[in-house]
Length: 148
Image 1 (cartoon, one colour):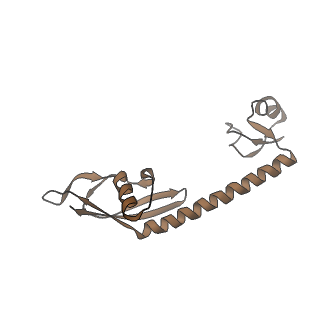
Image 2 (image 1 turned 180 degrees about the vertical axis):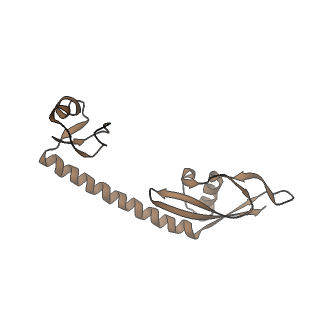
Image 3 (image 1 turned 45 degrees about the vertical axis):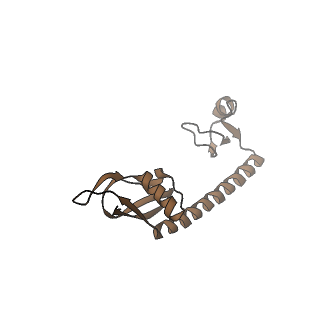
């Protein structure tokens, strides 16, 4: 029996998938618990329409993320930090500071969790930082640390 899953079901599939399951599993477990709906002709048409709309929405999100990535690639964020005698910084620069500077200097809002730093920046100079905007859209941001 074909069913459309309304929620994730372990061992069967994820929400929104069309799944082939045994009649007993569908009638005794999935459908009574509202985990799935029977895949009738009308239900399959609606499901296909939902899948098409979801794909169009995803394509729109990917294209906007790629446009944002191009803006980020062109930008160089400058941060002024206090330094000691040997050019060594007091403290470090993290993703929060980079996100704030990107917002102030270029009016580009990026969540700090999307900025990928293996470790905080602790030295003066230009560093490349990855910004993960979407599942397969990653931009390289230049961060220049200068003495205050």
